[in-house]
Amino acid sequence: MTSSQAQPAAIPGDAATTDPRWLDGVDLRQLAEAMPTPFHAYSASAIQQRIDALQTALAGLDATICFAVKANPNLAILQLMAAAGVGADIVSVGELRRALNAGIPAERIVFSGVGKSADEIAGALNVGIMRFNVESLDELHTLQRLAKTQDVMARAAVRINPDVDAQTHAKISTGKSENKFGVSIDEARRWFAARKQLDHVQLDGLHVHIGSQILSVEPFRLALQRVAAFWRELEQAGHPITSIDVGGGLGVCYRAGVDEPVAAADYVGVIREALAGFGGRLLLEPGRHLVAEAGVLLTRVIRVKPGTERTFLVLDAAMNDLLRPSLYDAWHDIVPLVDAARPMAVYDIVGPVCETGDTFARARELPECVAGELLLIKATGAYGTSMASTYNSRPLAAEVLLQNGRYAVVRRRQHFEEMIAGEQPARNWKTP
Image 1 (cartoon, rainbow, N blue to C red):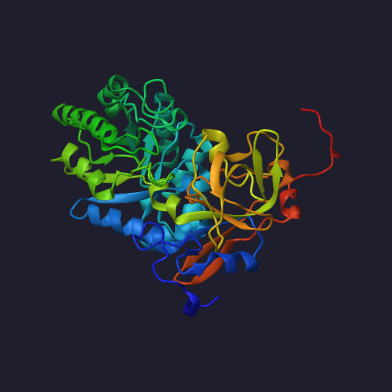
Image 2 (image 1 turned 90 degrees about the vertical axis):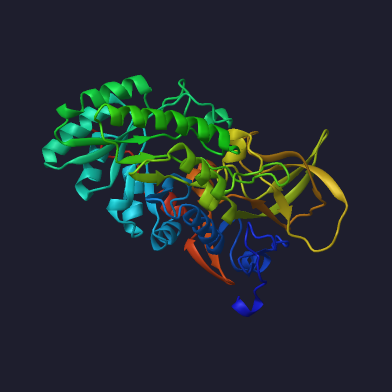
């Protein structure tokens, strides 16, 4: 496949994008002939467009974008972030190692998450990451102890739980008082009152993240207003705040004509308004917003199975390749890559995994499909491969990066031998 074959402007999010058979100048049907389905494909140009739009909106602010690695941890994706000057928001030592391996410097890495182990904290201290977002008093004391052991000064922010409803799915809401994340403002106030007892932790930041797939600016506005009021209170009490991490959560379009995502400029406008007068650094943690709509899952129809009450379209992709529909009942637009206009039919679109939950869509109306034809599942660039598994001993799917008519395999399809590499017969029996 050469750039001379490329169709122009086939990038998600572009107004000129009309043909789903093309992505970033690459003919997806030809690509599916070159490698077996299912596989994930990502548009590098679309990712760069999202980064550029957010960086443009932030112009004039002391702001650092830290990509939420959990959304898509592929090294090639992280290298795109590094090249664009984007940092990383991590939640495990594995994500830390991925970010560093991709060339993201430690001073642009923020460690979030409610369950950081002592070993993970020690490892992050050892490489000198920018900041820890601390979520419990026990974690704060652990950070103090480990930083003292290493004789380093850790920079820390307290994650505030502002008790704000993000108006999103319950399983991805993180800013209500019933959620496990962060601490109340009352508890955070006590931390700052005792901060001088922390001789190896510089507690000088605030952090808030209320959830994901948020399609309105109002939850952001309310959460940031509460954080701003607390920042001003702390400053007046003699506790300088040098960093405010506003989290992430910007939603994307999963269902055309229904989902209306917030524009980057409007989102940043809310940040500017709520935090007007703040002289420190702002941190942002977008994940889904930067990569979701840049990715697609290519899959083939194995068979059409008529049933008593419904007709099933059985694909070679399954819930182990894309868990969101099964886990969240999430909608993804699904498009057959066919040429001619056809009569419409209604299908339950399912995979081959032995679970009723292995369902991508119910009662979905599509052009009639036959065995062997290609389908495109859209907006899978976030939380597709990062949540994948080998359930039913199915290998992890390949990942392909596309850019201006070219493609590169950035993770090949998993071999069976790799899948079982850590397993062994029970030979060396021991007693504890």
